[in-house]
Length: 249
Image (cartoon, rainbow, N blue to C red; front, side, top):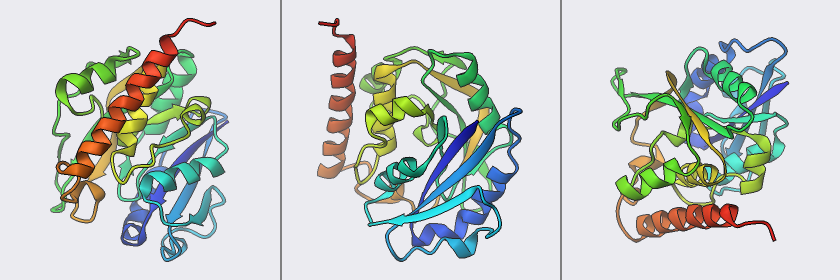
């Protein structure tokens, strides 16, 4: 069995790839499982290969026209073969046991469609701190609960960069929302509209905070682009929830 890890990368992100690979290479998986790493270069000028081992056949690098990280993630998904699909951004790191925990909970709970985990922010001075928002209780996240939380608090209930998803469910949604930012939040709320999730209380991701990431852009949290993104993410999730609740004809 294979779990696919998908990673979009732009030119500035290649400097972090070695650390991302080290965190992936140290993962211990359940018996009979292996991982593949689908690294997607977002544009023709990325050149990720020099930053990664050339002798690891589990690494699969490809390139596509520049479309932003969420388009690149979806292109990486298109090339993947795994039963489950795990997001790992080029500048982030998995913690020990992260993949095994995702596999275990999805294998044991067929009704659960996706899993997320606790996050630590990695600051530019090398220190870490807890994710700025409170985490939910560990365990099952009922279908629709993430959208309800979003409507009430105007932010995600869990960190979407930690998502691990069943392949058919991700295919049903067409991958990540093709937005300049927040496409992973759009995916999270779309998944929530269709299936329950699961939250691991263990830290599963070290999330690097730096000036070059898209969340540092001034349009990320304010302005007309932000308003359009947020509006579409919510409309998308509400439409999926309403459609999935319709009785069969």
